Image (cartoon, rainbow over all chains, first blue to last red; front, top):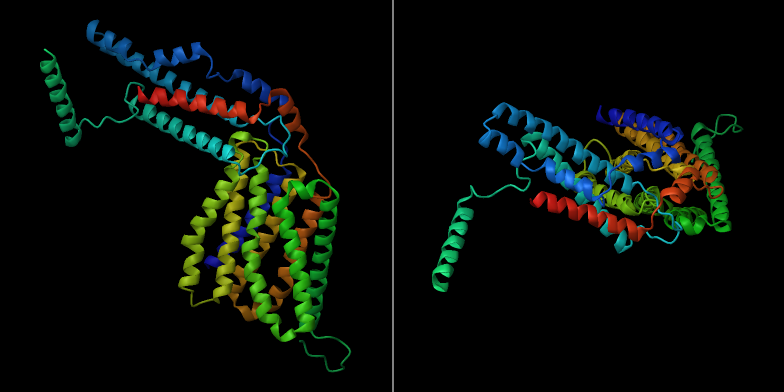
Length: 176
Length: 268
């Protein structure tokens, strides 16, 4: 029975392959150029400033704690969450555009197994993983949550922190 | 060898199948020879080194097996199975070539195809193919089981490569598209034959297997001959590369910059 299913899957696979190979190319050159012009650039300082403001919790805290507008603070948090998700998705789209940019140099000069290409692949995978993780955290906990988890709840971590504090205090006392 | 009929004039079914299989085998050999000659004559031989190494292997294998069958027929069965087992492994060279070519224009993911092929081959080799060698199933012969599982592994690699190529909008072009199509035909026909042999028994499938296996090879080689008749670069991609392309160093710098910015952002 399993082998028959495998055989059926093989036939379906072949049909899919034929369909895929016959399908016209999705991107026209002009279309791609337009897309790249929309995507934000990482070198653009204003765009990075925008991210600083989106992920900065001081506005929401100020509304909630100093002005005592919890509802407004909540609405601001929700709005910032949406903005943060859009910012991260835009960053991902911009990165994908970079990845999809073809090399204008001669295609015969580059080897698929050169150390440089493996390093670039590592950077690509690393970025994809990190941005996916960041999106997951923002969607689940909001934009003001720490992206790298704090280990303050771990007893060992607390001990170490206390030890550091003690050492710092001792240093201060010694210097006096 | 097949038996002759009562009159002695007509060959039996087995004999006809044998002749048909040989004829198909010779057709495949001719396709491979034409492919090789065209490849040597053009730049294709230099652009697809792994693929043409495989074609050389096919040509040498065919001639070697023919010579063994002619000079030492007693050794033929064992030589055939050794050749068959080596071929199962050598076919991964075609997958390696396909995976290298798909993402070749994109410097950031140039090694992605190779990485996927190696990871999937190693993973499925350990978890799916190796158990068939260590603990062979009782229902079917070991060799049939290994061959089927190896072909399924190849099909999975092809599906993943298709999916990732589609995700990144990688244009295949006639050369690479034909390479993939031909190999997919070969892999799927072999899976169907071997799955059928496992389900319905070897006795029923032995004569079919005898003809269908060279037919799958000949079909695959015919598709490859047509698609690799001459070098066909992807026109759209050239236009994009001229308009918006960057060199590898620029892409590497941008990738590092993206990663650094994201790392800074995560550490806040």
